[in-house]
Amino acid sequence: MSSIQLRTGAPGARILGFGGYRPRRRVTNDELSQSMETNDEWIQSRVGIAERRWASEDETLVEMAVAAGGKALAAGGLAPDEIDLVILASASLKEPIPGIGPQVAHRLGIPRPGAFDLNAGCAGFCYALEMAGSAIRTGSARNVLVVGAERLTDVIDRGDRSTAVIFADGAGAAVVGPSDDPGIGPVAWGSDGDQYSAIEIVGDGRAIAMAGQAVYRWATTKLTATLEEAMAAAGVTPADIDVFAPHQANLRIIESMHKRLGFPERTVVARDIVTSGNTSAASIPLALSALLESGEAKSGDLALVLGYGAGLTFAGQVLRLP
Image 1 (spheres, rainbow, N blue to C red):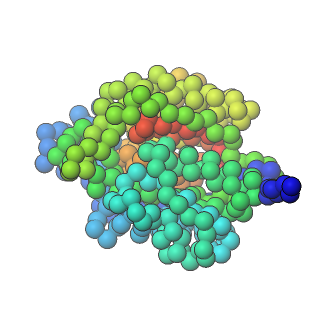
Image 2 (cartoon, one colour; image 1 turned 120 degrees about the vertical axis):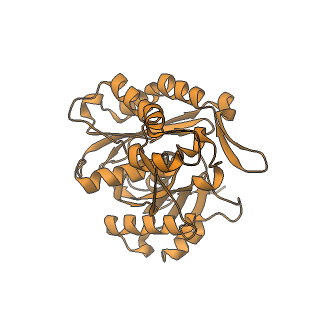
């Protein structure tokens, strides 16, 4: 009986380039206070957000994903026909069928790649990044485009201050390629499905509901161990981390994690939440893109990332920045 042969890929994978797209419209806390009972001090003291981006009608999920993906391709120095796989992470598709991964690939001129959508809530980008690295290491793909894209304004009640002040829109992308020296560390991931209802879309109005305090307690008490696991698996310690870029959900959560892990003073902390809001699966690539563009983060830096959200799902990795 013949044996099934398996492909073999590169020893490791690394990110070659990032790209991001932020909607044109800036929505300040003062603007929100005109339509709901809230104010700038209340919002900033609880979640740390000063403004967020809301997409206009023409800034669809596909359009934003294509814009971010095109920038990532350019930053990574790859032509569309060098991409074998496209993974689109999103929790805000209007319809489950068809997925938009193949459409985004087509719009970018990528010829007949493997393409699919992935929904792991706000952990989606990190889940997709692990799948991209695994595909490269097993030889299933040479280069992979990973995109996190969200239009969360499609699934919020704009009169609900518990969600409307937090969630926003945007897209972030990364091109992942082979590397003899691994640039994506082992993933530390999991889920706490007993708390599935903490973040959910309910009712005919398709509005997201969130038990904010429950999510805050979970993130601040349970997920530091995941970050420590990701660093241990990669063979590094907090002293080695140059950039800390967790999911941009809440500035208080970010600061709590930062304090617990005891990073050195030189470690740059992503605070994209302040001007971008919570963009779910897009938040980590958007934050890292911004840090690289500003020069706060540099090529070759070691970054620690952590995505977490609806499910409840979570995933952390150590990355070498392109």
